[in-house]
Amino acid sequence: MSAPIIYNTATKSISIEPELSTPEWEADAESINLMVRDLVALGQDVPMAANACNGKITEAFKKMLDSAIAEYKKSRYPDAIRLANLALGIAVRRYRWESFGYTLSEIGQVISFRCDVYLANSQWAEAFADASLLSLVIPNSALNHFRKGQCYQAINNLVAAKQCYQTGLTIASDNEQIKASLDEVNALLEKV
Amino acid sequence: MAQSVSLYTPVIYIAVLLSVLVIFSTVYRKRKLRSLEGMKPWYPTHTSRDIYETLAEMAPKPPTKVLTSALLRRATEDIRRVVKIREAKGALATLHQKGSVSDDLWLRFTKSEKLMELELQDCANEANKIKEGFASTLFSSAQEIAQNDAIRQRLGNLDKIRDDFKKEMENANITASKK
Image (cartoon, rainbow over all chains, first blue to last red; front, side, top):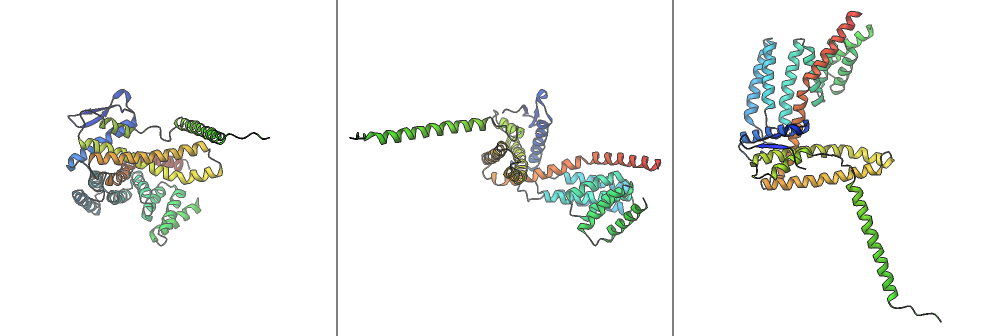
Protein backbone atom coordinates (compact mmCIF):
# COMPACT_ATOMS: atom_id res chain seq x y z
CA MET A 1 0.00 0.00 0.00
CA SER A 2 1.25 3.44 -0.90
CA ALA A 3 1.66 5.82 2.04
CA PRO A 4 0.16 9.34 1.87
CA ILE A 5 3.49 11.05 2.40
CA ILE A 6 5.05 14.19 1.02
CA TYR A 7 8.85 14.21 0.91
CA ASN A 8 10.49 17.61 1.17
CA THR A 9 13.84 17.45 -0.63
CA ALA A 10 15.03 20.76 0.87
CA THR A 11 14.50 19.87 4.52
CA LYS A 12 14.93 16.08 3.97
CA SER A 13 11.79 15.52 5.98
CA ILE A 14 8.50 13.79 5.36
CA SER A 15 4.99 14.93 6.15
CA ILE A 16 1.56 13.39 5.76
CA GLU A 17 -1.00 14.62 3.26
CA PRO A 18 -3.36 16.73 5.42
CA GLU A 19 -6.60 15.11 4.22
CA LEU A 20 -5.32 11.58 4.94
CA SER A 21 -3.53 12.37 8.19
CA THR A 22 -4.11 10.08 11.19
CA PRO A 23 -2.29 10.01 14.55
CA GLU A 24 -0.55 6.78 13.47
CA TRP A 25 0.82 8.26 10.25
CA GLU A 26 1.84 11.44 12.06
CA ALA A 27 3.69 9.49 14.77
CA ASP A 28 5.60 7.58 12.11
CA ALA A 29 6.51 10.73 10.20
CA GLU A 30 7.63 12.51 13.38
CA SER A 31 9.76 9.57 14.48
CA ILE A 32 11.41 9.23 11.05
CA ASN A 33 12.17 12.94 10.89
CA LEU A 34 13.74 12.82 14.36
CA MET A 35 15.95 9.91 13.35
CA VAL A 36 17.00 11.66 10.14
CA ARG A 37 18.07 14.65 12.24
CA ASP A 38 20.00 12.36 14.60
CA LEU A 39 21.72 10.58 11.70
CA VAL A 40 22.67 13.95 10.16
CA ALA A 41 24.09 15.01 13.55
CA LEU A 42 25.96 11.71 13.79
CA GLY A 43 27.32 12.09 10.26
CA GLN A 44 26.66 8.44 9.38
CA ASP A 45 24.23 6.72 7.03
CA VAL A 46 23.43 4.00 9.55
CA PRO A 47 23.43 4.16 13.38
CA MET A 48 26.38 3.05 15.45
CA ALA A 49 26.12 -0.25 17.34
CA ALA A 50 23.57 -0.13 20.15
CA ASN A 51 26.20 -0.63 22.87
CA ALA A 52 28.15 2.49 21.81
CA CYS A 53 27.54 5.44 24.12
CA ASN A 54 27.57 9.17 23.43
CA GLY A 55 30.13 10.32 26.03
CA LYS A 56 29.30 14.02 25.63
CA ILE A 57 25.71 13.43 26.72
CA THR A 58 26.87 11.40 29.74
CA GLU A 59 29.29 14.14 30.80
CA ALA A 60 26.78 16.97 30.35
CA PHE A 61 24.14 14.99 32.21
CA LYS A 62 26.43 14.31 35.18
CA LYS A 63 27.44 17.97 35.44
CA MET A 64 23.82 19.12 35.39
CA LEU A 65 22.70 16.54 37.94
CA ASP A 66 25.61 17.42 40.25
CA SER A 67 24.60 21.10 40.06
CA ALA A 68 21.01 20.13 40.89
CA ILE A 69 22.18 18.07 43.89
CA ALA A 70 24.29 21.01 45.09
CA GLU A 71 21.20 23.26 44.99
CA TYR A 72 19.18 20.65 46.87
CA LYS A 73 21.80 20.49 49.61
CA LYS A 74 21.44 24.26 50.02
CA SER A 75 17.65 23.71 50.31
CA ARG A 76 17.06 25.73 47.14
CA TYR A 77 14.34 23.41 45.91
CA PRO A 78 12.97 25.38 42.91
CA ASP A 79 16.50 25.74 41.50
CA ALA A 80 17.22 22.05 42.13
CA ILE A 81 14.04 21.12 40.24
CA ARG A 82 14.89 23.45 37.36
CA LEU A 83 18.37 21.92 37.01
CA ALA A 84 16.96 18.40 37.35
CA ASN A 85 14.57 19.17 34.49
CA LEU A 86 17.51 20.34 32.40
CA ALA A 87 19.39 17.12 33.24
CA LEU A 88 16.33 15.12 32.21
CA GLY A 89 16.22 17.06 28.94
CA ILE A 90 19.86 16.09 28.30
CA ALA A 91 19.19 12.41 29.09
CA VAL A 92 16.22 12.37 26.72
CA ARG A 93 18.36 13.89 23.92
CA ARG A 94 20.44 10.69 23.73
CA TYR A 95 20.18 8.93 20.36
CA ARG A 96 17.28 6.55 20.55
CA TRP A 97 19.24 3.63 19.06
CA GLU A 98 21.74 3.81 21.94
CA SER A 99 21.43 1.18 24.64
CA PHE A 100 18.27 1.58 26.70
CA GLY A 101 20.40 0.76 29.75
CA TYR A 102 22.08 4.19 29.60
CA THR A 103 18.76 6.00 29.19
CA LEU A 104 17.09 4.06 31.98
CA SER A 105 20.01 4.61 34.34
CA GLU A 106 20.13 8.38 33.71
CA ILE A 107 16.37 8.89 33.72
CA GLY A 108 16.14 6.75 36.86
CA GLN A 109 18.79 8.86 38.64
CA VAL A 110 17.30 12.21 37.75
CA ILE A 111 13.66 11.27 38.36
CA SER A 112 14.55 9.71 41.74
CA PHE A 113 16.35 12.88 42.69
CA ARG A 114 13.55 15.14 41.44
CA CYS A 115 10.99 13.03 43.30
CA ASP A 116 12.97 13.47 46.55
CA VAL A 117 13.09 17.24 45.99
CA TYR A 118 9.34 17.34 45.39
CA LEU A 119 8.78 15.30 48.58
CA ALA A 120 11.03 17.65 50.56
CA ASN A 121 9.09 20.58 49.12
CA SER A 122 5.68 18.92 49.84
CA GLN A 123 4.75 18.90 46.13
CA TRP A 124 2.84 15.65 46.49
CA ALA A 125 1.22 15.44 43.07
CA GLU A 126 4.51 16.03 41.25
CA ALA A 127 6.30 13.60 43.56
CA PHE A 128 3.57 11.01 42.99
CA ALA A 129 3.90 11.26 39.19
CA ASP A 130 7.66 10.69 39.43
CA ALA A 131 7.30 7.89 41.99
CA SER A 132 4.68 6.17 39.80
CA LEU A 133 7.03 6.22 36.83
CA LEU A 134 9.91 4.94 38.95
CA SER A 135 7.93 2.09 40.49
CA LEU A 136 6.86 1.10 36.99
CA VAL A 137 10.22 1.19 35.19
CA ILE A 138 12.42 0.19 38.15
CA PRO A 139 9.99 -1.98 40.16
CA ASN A 140 12.69 -3.84 42.07
CA SER A 141 13.70 -0.75 44.05
CA ALA A 142 12.00 -0.61 47.45
CA LEU A 143 12.60 3.14 47.67
CA ASN A 144 10.38 3.82 44.66
CA HIS A 145 7.41 2.16 46.34
CA PHE A 146 8.26 3.98 49.56
CA ARG A 147 8.18 7.32 47.72
CA LYS A 148 4.79 6.49 46.27
CA GLY A 149 3.53 5.45 49.68
CA GLN A 150 4.64 8.75 51.19
CA CYS A 151 2.54 10.64 48.64
CA TYR A 152 -0.53 8.54 49.43
CA GLN A 153 0.04 9.00 53.14
CA ALA A 154 0.29 12.77 52.66
CA ILE A 155 -3.23 12.88 51.18
CA ASN A 156 -4.49 10.47 53.83
CA ASN A 157 -5.04 7.55 51.45
CA LEU A 158 -3.76 5.19 54.12
CA VAL A 159 -4.83 1.93 52.48
CA ALA A 160 -2.92 2.72 49.28
CA ALA A 161 0.05 3.93 51.33
CA LYS A 162 0.07 0.69 53.30
CA GLN A 163 0.05 -1.34 50.07
CA CYS A 164 3.02 0.63 48.72
CA TYR A 165 5.02 0.16 51.95
CA GLN A 166 4.22 -3.55 51.96
CA THR A 167 5.40 -3.84 48.35
CA GLY A 168 8.58 -2.02 49.35
CA LEU A 169 9.13 -4.41 52.25
CA THR A 170 8.75 -7.46 50.00
CA ILE A 171 11.78 -6.15 48.13
CA ALA A 172 13.82 -4.89 51.11
CA SER A 173 12.44 -6.58 54.21
CA ASP A 174 15.02 -4.99 56.55
CA ASN A 175 14.48 -1.37 55.49
CA GLU A 176 13.90 0.43 58.80
CA GLN A 177 12.52 3.59 57.18
CA ILE A 178 9.77 1.66 55.36
CA LYS A 179 9.05 -0.46 58.45
CA ALA A 180 8.59 2.67 60.55
CA SER A 181 6.27 4.21 57.95
CA LEU A 182 4.22 1.02 57.76
CA ASP A 183 3.87 0.94 61.56
CA GLU A 184 2.79 4.57 61.48
CA VAL A 185 0.15 3.90 58.82
CA ASN A 186 -1.08 0.80 60.66
CA ALA A 187 -1.47 2.85 63.83
CA LEU A 188 -3.41 5.51 61.91
CA LEU A 189 -5.64 2.88 60.29
CA GLU A 190 -6.50 1.43 63.71
CA LYS A 191 -7.70 4.85 64.84
CA VAL A 192 -10.02 5.22 61.83
CA MET B 1 -14.82 -69.59 -18.55
CA ALA B 2 -13.54 -66.43 -16.94
CA GLN B 3 -12.78 -63.51 -19.25
CA SER B 4 -9.11 -62.50 -19.33
CA VAL B 5 -8.33 -59.07 -17.83
CA SER B 6 -6.66 -56.68 -20.17
CA LEU B 7 -3.09 -55.73 -19.41
CA TYR B 8 -4.15 -52.04 -19.53
CA THR B 9 -6.72 -52.39 -16.72
CA PRO B 10 -4.32 -51.88 -13.78
CA VAL B 11 -2.60 -49.06 -15.68
CA ILE B 12 -5.95 -47.35 -16.31
CA TYR B 13 -6.94 -47.97 -12.66
CA ILE B 14 -3.75 -46.35 -11.38
CA ALA B 15 -4.11 -43.45 -13.84
CA VAL B 16 -7.71 -42.79 -12.74
CA LEU B 17 -6.72 -43.04 -9.07
CA LEU B 18 -3.81 -40.63 -9.51
CA SER B 19 -5.98 -38.19 -11.49
CA VAL B 20 -8.60 -38.20 -8.74
CA LEU B 21 -5.93 -37.61 -6.12
CA VAL B 22 -4.38 -34.74 -8.10
CA ILE B 23 -7.77 -33.11 -8.67
CA PHE B 24 -8.67 -33.51 -4.99
CA SER B 25 -5.32 -32.07 -3.86
CA THR B 26 -5.58 -29.10 -6.27
CA VAL B 27 -9.15 -28.26 -5.27
CA TYR B 28 -8.34 -28.71 -1.56
CA ARG B 29 -5.27 -26.47 -1.75
CA LYS B 30 -7.12 -23.80 -3.71
CA ARG B 31 -9.94 -23.77 -1.18
CA LYS B 32 -7.49 -23.60 1.71
CA LEU B 33 -5.60 -20.77 0.03
CA ARG B 34 -8.86 -18.92 -0.62
CA SER B 35 -9.89 -19.31 3.02
CA LEU B 36 -6.47 -18.03 4.13
CA GLU B 37 -6.73 -15.08 1.75
CA GLY B 38 -10.14 -14.21 3.12
CA MET B 39 -8.89 -14.41 6.70
CA LYS B 40 -8.69 -11.11 8.60
CA PRO B 41 -5.04 -10.21 9.24
CA TRP B 42 -3.86 -10.09 12.88
CA TYR B 43 -2.46 -6.63 12.28
CA PRO B 44 -4.58 -4.91 9.62
CA THR B 45 -2.13 -2.11 8.85
CA HIS B 46 1.61 -1.48 8.94
CA THR B 47 1.98 2.23 8.33
CA SER B 48 5.76 2.39 8.85
CA ARG B 49 6.30 -0.39 6.27
CA ASP B 50 4.08 1.50 3.83
CA ILE B 51 6.11 4.68 4.40
CA TYR B 52 9.40 2.84 3.85
CA GLU B 53 8.18 1.18 0.66
CA THR B 54 6.80 4.45 -0.70
CA LEU B 55 10.12 6.18 0.00
CA ALA B 56 12.15 3.31 -1.50
CA GLU B 57 10.09 3.43 -4.72
CA MET B 58 10.36 7.22 -5.09
CA ALA B 59 12.22 8.67 -8.03
CA PRO B 60 14.67 10.25 -7.45
CA LYS B 61 15.50 8.18 -4.39
CA PRO B 62 15.62 10.05 -1.07
CA PRO B 63 19.00 10.21 0.71
CA THR B 64 20.23 7.08 2.50
CA LYS B 65 19.69 8.65 5.93
CA VAL B 66 15.98 9.05 5.19
CA LEU B 67 15.67 5.45 4.02
CA THR B 68 17.65 4.22 7.05
CA SER B 69 15.37 6.14 9.41
CA ALA B 70 12.24 4.81 7.72
CA LEU B 71 13.61 1.26 7.86
CA LEU B 72 14.50 1.66 11.54
CA ARG B 73 10.97 2.83 12.26
CA ARG B 74 9.59 -0.17 10.35
CA ALA B 75 11.89 -2.58 12.21
CA THR B 76 10.91 -0.97 15.55
CA GLU B 77 7.24 -1.65 14.83
CA ASP B 78 8.16 -5.22 13.82
CA ILE B 79 9.99 -5.74 17.12
CA ARG B 80 6.94 -4.49 19.05
CA ARG B 81 4.73 -6.91 17.14
CA VAL B 82 7.11 -9.84 17.60
CA VAL B 83 7.18 -9.20 21.36
CA LYS B 84 3.37 -9.03 21.51
CA ILE B 85 3.01 -12.22 19.45
CA ARG B 86 5.50 -14.06 21.68
CA GLU B 87 3.73 -12.87 24.82
CA ALA B 88 0.35 -13.96 23.47
CA LYS B 89 1.46 -17.30 22.05
CA GLY B 90 1.66 -19.27 25.31
CA ALA B 91 -1.72 -18.16 26.59
CA LEU B 92 -3.40 -18.56 23.21
CA ALA B 93 -1.94 -22.07 22.72
CA THR B 94 -3.29 -23.14 26.13
CA LEU B 95 -6.71 -21.68 25.37
CA HIS B 96 -6.72 -23.38 21.96
CA GLN B 97 -5.83 -26.76 23.52
CA LYS B 98 -8.70 -26.35 26.00
CA GLY B 99 -11.05 -25.50 23.17
CA SER B 100 -11.70 -21.98 24.47
CA VAL B 101 -10.33 -20.46 21.27
CA SER B 102 -11.57 -21.39 17.80
CA ASP B 103 -9.40 -23.06 15.17
CA ASP B 104 -9.91 -20.04 12.92
CA LEU B 105 -8.43 -17.69 15.49
CA TRP B 106 -5.50 -20.03 16.11
CA LEU B 107 -4.93 -20.30 12.34
CA ARG B 108 -5.03 -16.51 12.04
CA PHE B 109 -2.46 -16.28 14.82
CA THR B 110 -0.06 -18.85 13.34
CA LYS B 111 -0.45 -17.21 9.92
CA SER B 112 0.45 -13.83 11.43
CA GLU B 113 3.52 -15.43 13.02
CA LYS B 114 4.71 -16.70 9.65
CA LEU B 115 3.99 -13.33 8.05
CA MET B 116 6.10 -11.67 10.76
CA GLU B 117 9.01 -13.98 9.92
CA LEU B 118 8.74 -12.95 6.26
CA GLU B 119 8.49 -9.29 7.26
CA LEU B 120 11.67 -9.55 9.37
CA GLN B 121 13.46 -11.27 6.52
CA ASP B 122 12.35 -8.53 4.15
CA CYS B 123 13.60 -5.87 6.59
CA ALA B 124 16.99 -7.58 6.82
CA ASN B 125 17.25 -7.72 3.00
CA GLU B 126 16.38 -4.04 2.74
CA ALA B 127 18.97 -3.19 5.42
CA ASN B 128 21.68 -4.93 3.44
CA LYS B 129 20.60 -3.02 0.34
CA ILE B 130 21.17 0.24 2.24
CA LYS B 131 24.56 -0.85 3.57
CA GLU B 132 26.17 -4.27 3.50
CA GLY B 133 26.10 -5.73 7.03
CA PHE B 134 23.50 -3.26 8.36
CA ALA B 135 21.07 -6.17 8.85
CA SER B 136 23.27 -7.48 11.67
CA THR B 137 22.70 -4.34 13.78
CA LEU B 138 19.26 -3.29 12.51
CA PHE B 139 17.15 -5.28 14.95
CA SER B 140 19.30 -4.57 18.01
CA SER B 141 19.03 -0.85 17.21
CA ALA B 142 15.29 -1.23 16.63
CA GLN B 143 14.89 -2.97 19.99
CA GLU B 144 16.65 -0.10 21.77
CA ILE B 145 14.49 2.42 19.88
CA ALA B 146 11.32 0.58 20.93
CA GLN B 147 12.36 0.68 24.61
CA ASN B 148 13.60 4.27 24.45
CA ASP B 149 10.34 5.33 22.77
CA ALA B 150 8.34 3.58 25.49
CA ILE B 151 10.07 5.43 28.35
CA ARG B 152 9.74 8.76 26.52
CA GLN B 153 6.05 8.05 26.12
CA ARG B 154 5.78 7.35 29.84
CA LEU B 155 7.58 10.61 30.59
CA GLY B 156 4.99 12.33 28.42
CA ASN B 157 2.22 10.86 30.58
CA LEU B 158 3.59 12.34 33.83
CA ASP B 159 1.43 15.47 33.56
CA LYS B 160 -1.73 13.39 33.37
CA ILE B 161 -0.72 11.30 36.42
CA ARG B 162 0.07 14.51 38.33
CA ASP B 163 -3.29 16.09 37.41
CA ASP B 164 -5.19 12.92 38.38
CA PHE B 165 -3.42 12.87 41.75
CA LYS B 166 -4.25 16.55 42.27
CA LYS B 167 -7.91 15.70 41.74
CA GLU B 168 -7.58 12.88 44.26
CA MET B 169 -5.97 15.37 46.69
CA GLU B 170 -8.86 17.79 46.22
CA ASN B 171 -11.39 15.03 46.80
CA ALA B 172 -9.48 13.94 49.92
CA ASN B 173 -9.55 17.51 51.23
CA ILE B 174 -13.27 17.80 50.54
CA THR B 175 -13.93 14.53 52.38
CA ALA B 176 -11.71 15.57 55.29
CA SER B 177 -13.45 18.95 55.62
CA LYS B 178 -16.90 17.27 55.54
CA LYS B 179 -15.83 15.02 58.40
